[in-house]
Image (cartoon, rainbow, N blue to C red; front, side, top):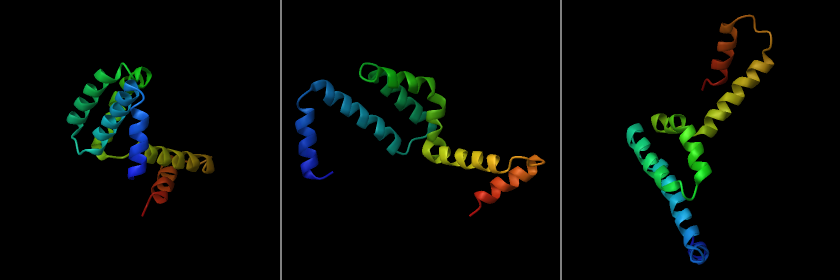
Length: 117
C-alpha cells in the first residue's frame, strides 16, 4: 500500500468508529492465516476472533462456526480452498469426459495422469 492509499484509508476509517473496528477485525482474521500456526493454535486464534466478531460479522461468524473444522484444515497443509476447488473441477471434468469408464482403475489412472508433473 502506498502513502496515498494509506491516507485515503485513514480518512475513510476516521469517519466511523464501527467501520474502523470492523476493518481491524478483518485484518486480524487475515493475520491468523498469514502466520505460521499449528492446527491447534490456529483453531484457538479463530475461536478468539469469533468471540469478538459476533457483533460486526454475525452472519460470517456463523458460517465460519458451521464450517470450522474444514476451515481449520487449512493449517494442515496451507492449501487455499481455491486450489482445492480447481482440483475438484478438474476431476469432475475427467468424470464427464470419461463417461463409461469400465472400472475405477481406469478413472484413477486418468486422474493421476492429469495431475502428474
